[in-house]
Length: 293
Image 1 (tube, rainbow, N blue to C red):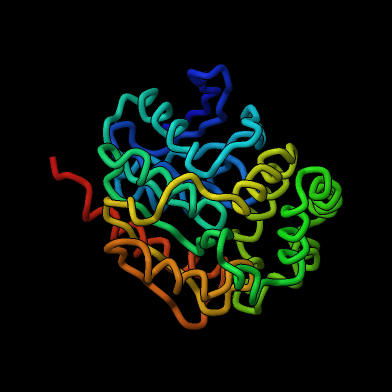
Image 2 (cartoon, rainbow, N blue to C red):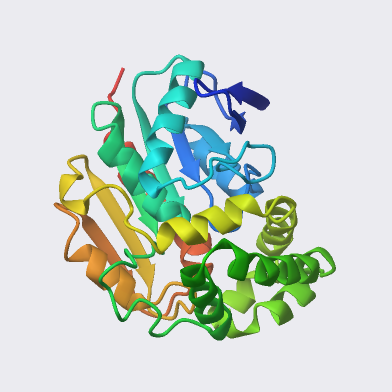
């Protein structure tokens, strides 16, 4: 079953949601990266369906199809995920996210501990506040982007507008060129396949509306609104050593501070390649927490 929903939220906003896979499957609520949208990649949809899971994706507030929530904190996403689960008629679900989606997956686990069965965070940024080495090891584009985010919305928006124009005008090769400072060879390699096509499609959709991207950046540079110490559900962390978008030390820091987390700090993998090569094993870890009928 494939379905697209314009979900009316209790506060009057609308959330763009997509659902695929078996109708009776336990949902995996997936948080996209930054920028991103509700688009489901072919590989992700196939891998979840093969395991009997129902893949649920959405566009974060302010991204394509979803109403903006100005000033939102990372923690605020839990309310939206509760509304999604309520609409689907499910009490319990899995959640996961990659890159900028990682903190939102953790926030969902903290905010809804009685409903989240397990959390997966892939190439997840660590908190910015009180972390002076946050930008160390990042590509030049990310360093510039976060530097502008610290100055506020008016400073950041022109940068995002320029980046959007470059993404909208590019094919897969053009995206590689645009993101040159952020892509090690191991990530460039996966962009030559179906993965590259889906990434470009997702990026193009994800930058149609810029407030989702902007508000993510602003939220990451502020207090997240929750403490990692409060994560009480089973959690899994994956991070590659060659990542130039979210450097390896972010994963090391999180692995040392998330209570009971199972860390996979993988040598030789990048920001994109780790999910391409290991998404199946990531799902299999989560499946251990799905109640048997």
